[in-house]
Image (cartoon, rainbow, N blue to C red; front, side, top):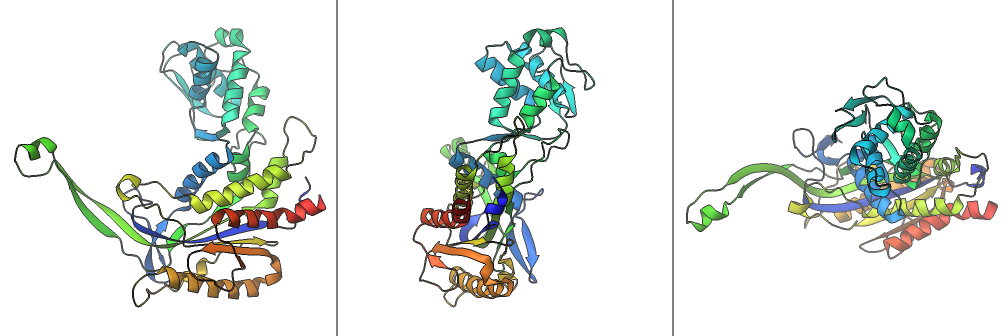
Length: 397
């Protein structure tokens, strides 16, 4: 579908969310991630961490799945074993033939007559779940070719049709159309992601604290002896986070309109609506799962603002370059909201308010001016944003 029929370019989503004692994201030293911004230390959650949580939520919401793995061969072997009843060694050899035919650099672990034999790609490859099954089905059509040759090193050639294998690999689904894929080794397999996710950070100064903990040995305790069976320490923090993400609707429609098996155009408007809605809903509800069993930080956002723009994304992160100070009685949520609204009004005026096609918000607290129309649930907020974003497309299609 021509993107000229889609004046809305981006749908921005801004979130303020208070998170209690937690360790949402850690570095290589097991320390809470932080950032210095505006001259003070803030707790940070990396975009990669939140995007992973977002992607998992999105997959459940949209009902489609993708796999990022170096072990395509093993994934194909699992399908051949379960769906086509191939024995394990034969299925693993077929998986190796698939990898060798893909054109992706790989190495071989084990021997073809062993159950731990495997062809492993040098880098992670992102495939739709449907593609893995299709690759297994393709291998199942060529049992004799697979028997004739063993893949024992990276220079061995596959007996499977390389063009067919690569055609399946470059296919996408809603997950790949949305989040993109980097795969330069297969021609035309790269997909520019339609989603951009910012690092989340606290709107205020946030000190990292250390939790000293012990674990009691139950038997030692029952015998009346003292002392712990284990002791250690872990870092945690708490605060009100500003989160921002945006979806490029034109990039999404372009990704969905790419056809590799036929040149025929197709109408993608309804699918694009569903994907945009699933993205917005998933970003609102997602939360990284690190240390969830010991912190359970499952809060709802305090404020969500969705803006449909015709020009470019506009983050309000700079609203918090000056850190928010807690209210007299404590708390950062209300002050963060006020600071966000004030900055949003200024930034929108500077950038041109006519570039905002629609704006809505939902959250706790009293009505506020400057973020558009209030709705009273996150589901209604997502629906309003999607309707506004795709109304030009539907009217001009």
